[in-house]
Length: 265
Image (cartoon, rainbow, N blue to C red; front, side):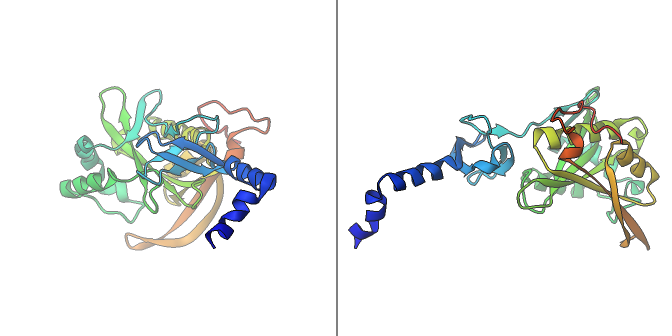
């Protein structure tokens, strides 16, 4: 019986060998840039974000024949900011941000105290870009002085890791100074050029005029409204959704737009 089971592979001749070679060609073999273990992914994953099945870290599958996967391109440096993962030492700046009741005016969130901030940071330290159903937080740090003035989140919405929802929170003391737009431009470039994502979306409360202007000026398309879909601080609020596709970010001739982001239409 054992000989019979082995026979198709051994005696299949040239056809079986060719099938095996084709099967191997359908996969990309490389090592994880974090744990160093060998991994293999379908060829259609090349150039895209995946999670290491061994250490769970997120990486980009090499599309250039490289032997090692590419690490997620963080931190990001802009003209005035460093956009990077949150760290334990951020707790005081986050407390200043999250203790402000006005910060939660258009959301159903509530202010956090010191203990809440510390527990949040401890939990966030274990979150990867591809962790299911978990927002991936990025801190917005001033290059001049190192103060954390806000954060952004990316949250994948599809199992192929091609689409994300994006949110942004900024300390009131640093609003209306261009930091939000600088962050949005950098993260759109990170998503479309760095991660080769298909779609980036975000929503904004219909009463938040500054937020609506931000997404419009960034070049995102206003796609629709969910009328009175959220109960926020005693009243029904409408969510306005914005989005951009990779084809919006890259012109039809295949040349990338400047790193400043999507050109407003």
